[in-house]
Length: 273
Image 1: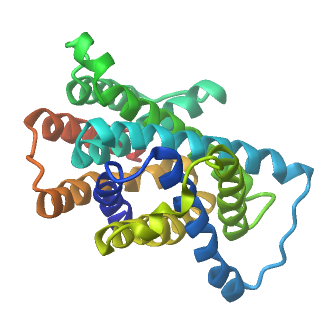
Image 2: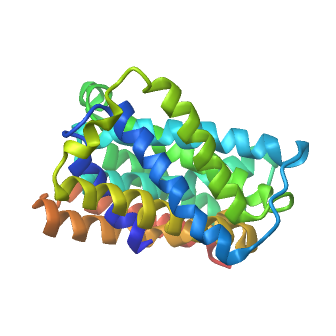
């Protein structure tokens, strides 16, 4: 969660430097390379079949969509705000998807949690100002939260068919290939003309913020379940806000703090036994 929290500030550093397609390709490509020593360390046999291929393809598509949406959101918004909105609304949406798709009966405290989550999201996204919501970064952040809820569900059920390390690696490899085709006509080698600040942010985002952190998340999702794993994401907003405050001098917005607090309380009610 700490590594993910810092990833939003790293992405904010990258967004104004180069076109989106170039940054997204290099993010996935470096992420794939970073998985090679992890694969060597675990030494698990790699098996791809029909039963796990649907989860791999689905998560690859969602990961690319998440990266595009987060890039656009961070480009027009604040890194701290993105970290709070996405990571507090995603657990609520994950639980809601589970309840709808699997017809899970909710308890009273969980209804309270969902209600608080909706109020928290309304506060953070400033939906009352509808024109600002549509023209600003919040709609991208909301889309990110929904996409990541889908990623969380797919990662949970994929563990029955494929090792999470292989799952993460193949997703990044497929995403690298797809984004390379899309960015082929762009000047991909322009990244080597960038300064050290760019490369520190890129390596942090691709290796620590993705290869390491995402692998841990997928392993946890398979062992604890998607709902419980998502509840740990309440730590990300705190880390995202603090890191953005110190590295990017971003202001602490009152509506983000208030809405984020309500959403974290919502997660508590949803997961409380």
